[in-house]
Length: 428
Image (cartoon, rainbow, N blue to C red; front, side, top):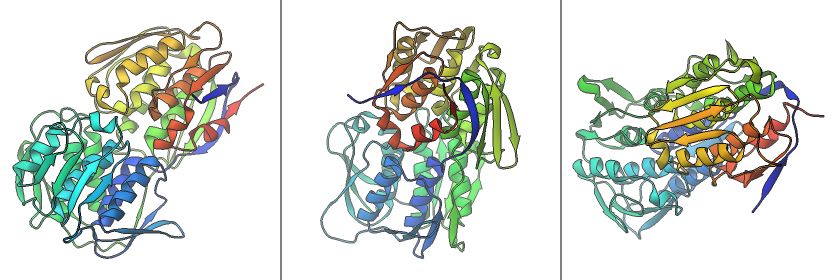
């Protein structure tokens, strides 16, 4: 097992550039691969998840070549005739959901699979919705999970409903695939959509690529292929990966500025900045950057509904561990279906760091203090989950020295996270 030794920190100070958005990059990769004319993706994220999606799209017939500013995509995807194509999404839930819908909409025969953990993550609601629109999808194992065998070009146009109470990615997958369906699709969620802001990111990206989006009654969204004219798409900064830096200022004390963040933003985790402020971190939004300052002595506990920004909960929980009193994060049952069971994982991680946390069915309760105390130099588990590793880094800021387990798992979304974090840490 690899560990990262994390020496004591005296504070935070400096400026750091937000990495490119993983959410926007993945959506742009799919839409670029569905085009028949080339498009340049400017400053896309390079991570394990985005590489997995690129490999799968190339297996489906697209081509991505390096450009001066990022990547140039040549489409469209689709394999007429020939052998079955294996699409290995690695550990990326986003890639798996998007590819399932796209594979049903374009020519070809596909087997969609992924890592052991990915094959345990829910797909049933998306499969049900796709089948209702005529898609030919069969399980190669358990019903409702990967691997899936998909016969392409079987998705027909029209209206469909999808249960998105466990993942907004089911809605986004259908909206993206709509541009490959003659006549498009109208997608209506059948219940509350968790992580709903991610759907807005999907709609913004569709519009940026020139496709037609219409909102109807009962929350239905219709998407039809437009006539894309833009020759490039610029990927915005990632609020999800920037949040740890903003929270770090509240834990270790000091000030940090993160550049490359737009505000207001459809990015789901941009909403979590309001929670940082409620917890006592001073957050200043200025043009294309965000500045944060504070210290653990001024932190306050909160009680919030976090269903719209689940990826921020590990960061917020680490901050709550340093706030005197009890914090509650509600509406987060869907965290159990992420790269790890994040509710159970967070409870174990916070406990290892000397804090007190309880994972309920739909809630995480954290009882914090300005300096959580663990016995000796704690070893912080990450459960092979990039968001857990980022939370572990925050918990290490107030410790006399920790060991972070498997730090390389941040490569899933932000390979340079620990290197970039080091540039703003004040030590000695």
